[in-house]
Image 1 (tube, rainbow, N blue to C red):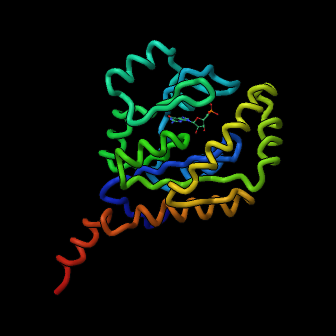
Image 2: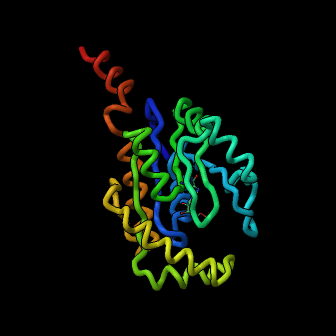
Image 3: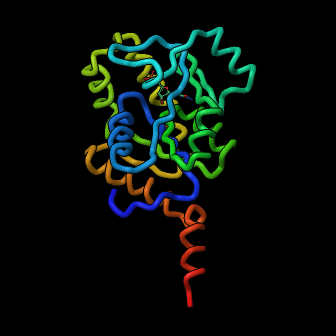
Length: 209
Ligand code: 5GP
């Protein structure tokens, strides 16, 4: 991005929404366009799906390992979704923000609530499906889950949508291009907040005659 000036501090963006709503596409595209914007790689006890890579999509760990990390306070947030445990590791999150990088967390609504409490300045975005029927279709066309899994995921949709009122921004993913533009707008606006631009303001004030 030409003429980009990095913020003084990185920001934390939470993107929640039902499975299959298109969060991954939105995240991939935003990371390709916005400098120093990374993806927070969660730990999970679920098995990798075809094509998923350790350390890129998730850290795949067993339940014993997950439990001892919970015990050690290693998670910024963690939750059980579809009987599997998922969590955001505290250390890499803090390291990224400390280095001036920003992060997107693809986490469920329970995790979003915990992040809000731990870091009130985090920006939370809910990505909603244009219609629930379309969501089931999308999960099936992905071809990675059984009918039983899809049925349970659809039950979870109700839980996720029920929490929508707690989010800062709501996007309905009708057209990916538009969703993308709006999501990037939110990210870029946050990174240009005055509280993240102190060094630019200071430099300008010093140069005044
Ligand atoms: P999936 O198994 O389809 O990758 O993810 C299932 C759900 O778990 C999604 O709603 C996703 O946002 C959520 N999820 C993934 N990682 C985390 C995490 O670290 N914490 C929480 N709370 N939810 C997560």
